[in-house]
Image (tube, rainbow, N blue to C red; front, side):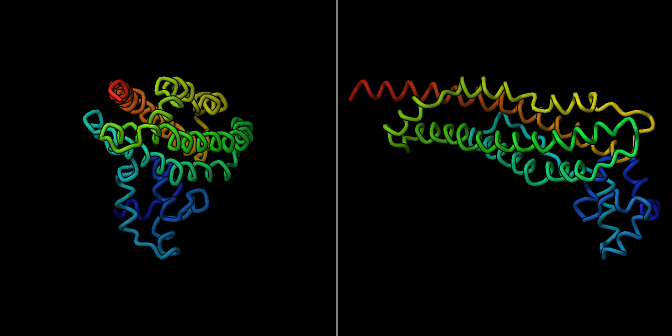
Length: 250
């Protein structure tokens, strides 16, 4: 503990770039306090150094999605899990990366153009990504919810018929696949997050966070493609069969 307490903020983050994310949520922007020790910053901000050290010793442990056996979960819980992931993306991770990009001063010839390009592209990526998430919740998740209610006979048949005519899970799946590589442009700008030996600390932190976010997106997409869509399509087929069988007897 004394070692971390007496270590400069810049060195703490250089040892493990994910620590910048932990410090951020205690109100410590690593690039503003790089030369001060953790103890000095905590004294200045009135923070408990022991609490921050506990979090720094296990960076990311309280900020990652749980490793759950989702394939065995009912479809409504899978959707709740995905909505929670959306919340973490939109309210926590993306605002943090956005602030890193806004404050990005390359201070190195190799990264000056990257800094300029990221400041233009990241806000566009953010806008498109948030639009995609809300559209998914307002259309796909609502439609699957209607199918679930139909399975329990808890929806008006006419309303169900309208929704089934309007939506198709196969179409949703195809459109979703087209969005699976949303960070392609950012990878091109950063040359696949390539770091030179002289890369400044701020660059290392941004690239680490972008890579971690891309990995989280890939996990999220895999859950949707390999678990949610197969379960939802089976449900849709069941409801459609049940609906038309019922219609034959009316």
